[in-house]
View 1 (cartoon, rainbow, N blue to C red):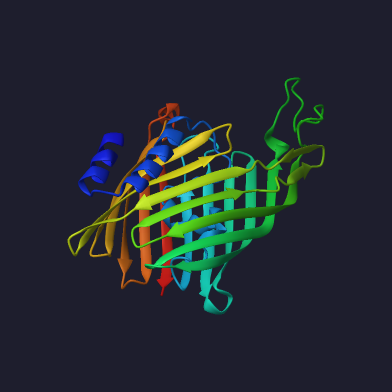
View 2: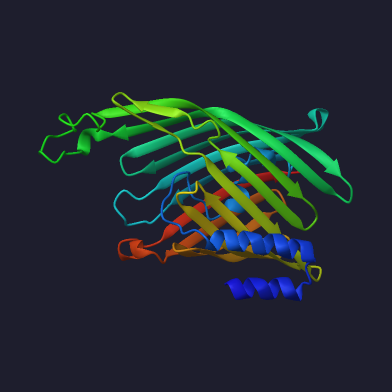
Length: 311
């Protein structure tokens, strides 16, 4: 995948500066391994930028809305299930965009809900380029079901272990995100952080801090004739204890039909496809073939998205 990515860059004669940036991203990806999941994971991440980067609100369309569902590592006990929805709008009077999003994530006996309000300020640059900076504020709720747990001494529900939440418990904390995006006719480059304030979740007798996450997103579109374009991209997520990185190539025909392949280091090979109907509606699907040790029990991951896009 790495060599295919290099060949695409060479054949399209990408500018030297962009090549240097991309090379640094690749080195950063190879330095870490995907070993854990904190924030929800997405294969169709090109459609969910505003969930992790508030600078994306109002950056791509005047109105955009979408909903998606992900069934990850299907067949593995307690596998993650994620659902999300978002709406973003560009407002010229405030020189920016507003957005709202919601995500639900279930992993084993833990469930997480997050609601955020986004604001982005758009700086219009020359040659149809835009620099966007955004902030988000919201709430993060995490719940855990301890009724299924049995401690080492055989006590149900963790009644004799003060470090185990008893029964069903939940806690809520304030959440803040920040991000920046640069967009031109061909290049997209974003940097963001979620859970900046590292809010504290309290489960009656247990408390912990939400870990701050960092994201890098980059892609470059090469136009091949009038009907065809290729977009290689990279998406990195880390909280410095573990790292996930996707190498992605997306092919588009007549700006309507699209398909692609992605490699997630030490985790999966992903296939995706979709169609944009009348330039307004999007339907997309992805399937991840698990390549990690979880493949013994996992039959793969499925993800779908339905979106509306209006200029």
